[in-house]
Length: 471
Image (cartoon, rainbow, N blue to C red; front, side):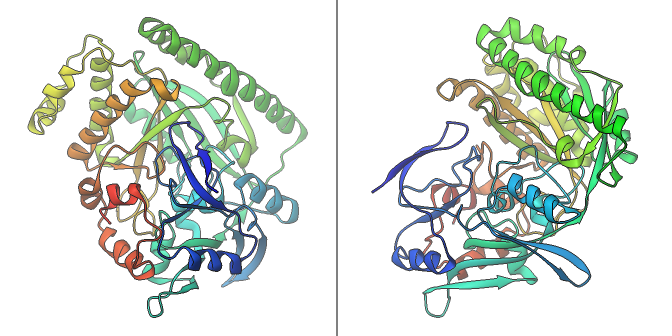
């Protein structure tokens, strides 16, 4: 019997036959039973794109969540079951060892397979995908066409499985690189010049920053790692106070104010955002375990996000375009810089933008994080010789009230793709198609060849894969 499923953002709903296997043998049996159908694995359903949607069969791997530490070539690796959530993984790592994960995204509710399969990342490091040293998957044997288990520890197959988008098979377990536990020092500062923001990365490599619409100022979260996982009592006490401050003020009250201002209309939104740079506690340094600094309660209020990735060499121009477009959409007086106008007109984007004047007011800061080059085929940081910067565009409007947000994101995505060959996060709002993906990812042909070999009948493909990969 099919069951109704809805993702975290409330923007994807589908009905499918859902299985929750308790063993690898059960996974193989399900794959064999549905080898003429369509099957997608689901994690925590935090993705906003329709990457996990299946109107046929959904596979929930929550019961495959074991954890085992082992040594290989002098490194300590964690073999983690596909359904293990990041919070549980961190809790078990910290309780049984002095190890942790080398990077963390904003939330800890995702399953490790979902985080890896979509290239989930933090700031200042590579994504989870880059740190996969081995993958164990269930797919179809090219010779017999029957389900089988494949293990990859190197080569193109591993680089594909590191960010497989659900197309390289059903992830059963992953071998992840671990590092010694560490703390992170963070100080929030204000800035008006991008060049001075980027200079922070020299001494604070885990920095992220927000570009606040209508105020058009930067809020910089200067972050650097420190050795060890336990400081003196004053440091620990201060860390607890900051956790309370961030939970109550940032995660709850600030986001509640965002929702209320968005509902109140454009004028209130602009006034609230112009006030935002003055609302955070700045110039005070805290030190805490990496887990508590690098993550947040980013799931208390339902929202949706689009994330665009541009090369470091393009960031300044991309933010010029973003500022100008955001002002135009909001009906603000705005004149583009000469190079911005030239680029928009060269790609026939300017007239379309002006036709959308006053149609949407962005009500949340634009967050920017750095992503280092990655050893994968199609994660967002793949096949690049320079760091990328992600630009996140959030909405807290209700799912049924996001039409204007989608128009804003659609124009931005097409513009950033055309002007700067931007990539979009696979698991977030994705208004582009296969042509843009083919242009942006040099490793895509190799990735598709491996997927077709392991899945000749397209069992692991859905409408999302058809639309964005052309498979």
